Image 1 (cartoon, rainbow, N blue to C red):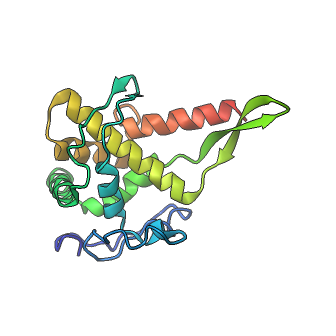
Image 2 (tube, one colour):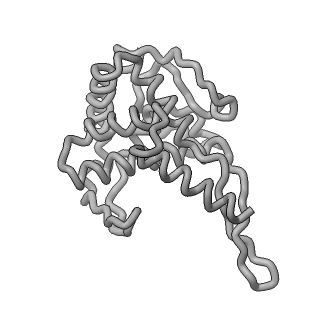
Length: 197
C-alpha cells in the first residue's frame, strides 16, 4: 500500500511503458541508491520520480511564454513534496472515487509523446529529423510536463500546489486535450516531429 492507503496493483496498458514504470509497494524515498546504476530510474517508484520532478528549482527562463522562478522553495525538501503528493492523491480520490495511483499511471500514458525531433548536421547544414523516443524518456517528459503545468497554474492562480497537481493529473488521465497543459505539449512535440519527417 502506497502511503499505507492506496494499492499499487495497477495494470499499465501501454506495453512500451510497462518495464519503466515501477509500482512496488514501498515508501517513495530511496535516497538515490539507484542514481549511478545503468537504467537505475526503472527501479525508482513512479511516485518518487514525480516527487523528484517537483523538487525543481526556478529556471528563470521562459517556459511557454512565462518565466518560472520558484526561488528554490521545494529544492531538496523531499518530505514536503511527498506531503503535497499525498494531499493531491487525497484530492483525486475525493473527486473521482478511484485509486489515484491508477489515475497517475493513466495520465503518464496519455501525456507521454511517441516522437520527438533531433538536430543532425550534414555537410555543415543542420536538419531537424523525427526520431522515436525511448520509454524512459517518454515517462520523464510526461512527468516533467505534468509538474510544469502544476507549477505554472500554482504561480498564476495562487491555488495550493496539491490542488493544481491533482487537477492536472485528472485532466491528463481523462485525455482532456483542451484543458491539460501536458497533453497540449505532447501534441506540440508530435506535431513538430511529424512536420520534420
